[in-house]
Image (tube, rainbow, N blue to C red; front, side, top):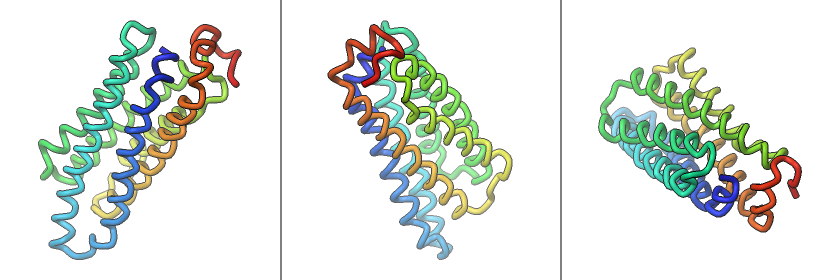
Length: 200
């Protein structure tokens, strides 16, 4: 699986770009959230845009998992992609969902995704001992999910701010992982066959 992940680093990079686009949009929309009519339109559009980007990011992850088919532990990558796709599809199909239910849905998605990402990070560290980008992504997902479940924000602008922060953080860590994998292309065979001992 390690070799396939390295060869398909660009799929993870694409997922990071989608997250970065959402973060930029989320922060840019905060300036118009004070106007009621524009706020309602902007929030509805943002939910749909979030759904489209999540669906795209999930599909990239699923494609990476399929390309890992037959390799050990590729199912973690597959389930990660499926969870992201489900969150994206739910946002697109129910853009008028009450904010509180949207909060619960995103919280559950973030918690499940965080657990899967931490499990993937554990497997990845057997081949790249100093790799921590994916672990940071998982920790960020868990923190977002826990925050949303505990605080249950009822203001759209607060929800928007946290989603923007999370998307930006996720984009940085996923892009960091993708470019780290890209830099290891020359050592792909060694890393796949000699776990935890041949990090450049």
